[in-house]
Length: 513
Image (cartoon, rainbow, N blue to C red; front, side, top):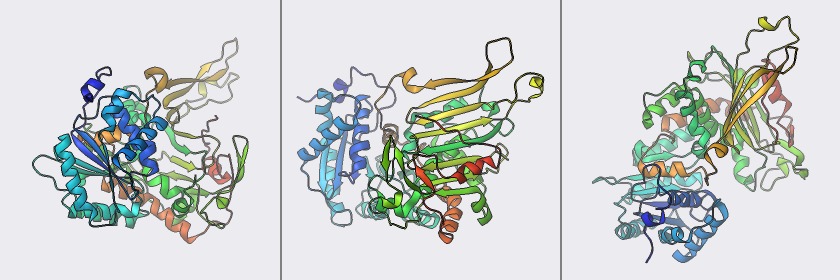
């Protein structure tokens, strides 16, 4: 007899609320996102005892699989992408909750058939008619799938059961398309049913930004223009386009990273304290920050933004090709693989404090971090000593690959002469709390199961992010770059990105391997 979820997880006490009884439907179940991220995340939730006993998964895709074949694929994914060994008892319980349903997303006939299948599974697994649909598909399917689900009655909520839809990025390709998609979705479902996912918000350090700021009395009082000189947000990747040339050459780094990932990091770093951790209380404060970002004129775009495209170079000692030589990329492509910008937030807390951001591919290290640089202390006390200048204090929130927090400050070097050295105090999650198997999707999937939208973007937040990006997109389209490629693979981007900060007497904080 198969063991129950309670028996399987008895050895690992549950920390947190267990997910509601439900059936998860994954559109695009044969794709890379499902195998690398979603399935391992579900397995990790099962190990933690956070999946309900009344839980099932239906994979939907055009590929032809039997249930057993799909379960075999699920097993291979768990084995390949989970950091822990597969527990045989847990696997017996976990695998029997996976089913496969072949079909074409654009076929109207699919959805009534899926409805009958879900009703059958609901009876077998006592899922309380709670369904959520994860759209791990191309963006062109987002609106049509939700429309067809609604037409089939699969988004209707009554008698206490819920229906939700999880939508991956990119949410639109500019402001107009984002507004159109929001309008299309909101004709069919309520905002409370829409979970616009950003996997960056599943990172422990990102979630910890609010705890770090608002639970520590020593930081929040200095988190403002009086003490902070500037903020840097960097998302550096060592990889190129990794076989995504056809998608990336139409998107580019600006669309791919800035309106979603980076805007979320800015809003959490800069937001005012919410009145509670209620989802809308938190998102209200995030939205205020995004709306307060100073819109850029054409002149601002020219002086406060930088774009780049990688050329040939070296990565880990190996020669790598230029972006224009990547598969499915136009040989004269004008698509940017690097973006740097200087933003200003027009509110009382952040007036005159620049927020510098950058993201790029084929950089020296894979590293995502937020640097809070404080104002320098007055030099007057040290004017008659060998100390020639004072280094500013920096607080760094490390998001990936290692998650942690470090604080840089000055200390006297031992000896008879007054000399100062820079000291780093480092905190790493893994060192203090132990290594935990995670894809970054566990928290987000669990939140969807319990109805917590705190870490998901609201319609107004999505549109506010695009409002920042749109003027840059428009000008870059009107004025093609003349010097691409303008940085070598394995470097920190074009020289113009360094000059963006040097003009203000500042410089980027770079991290080595």
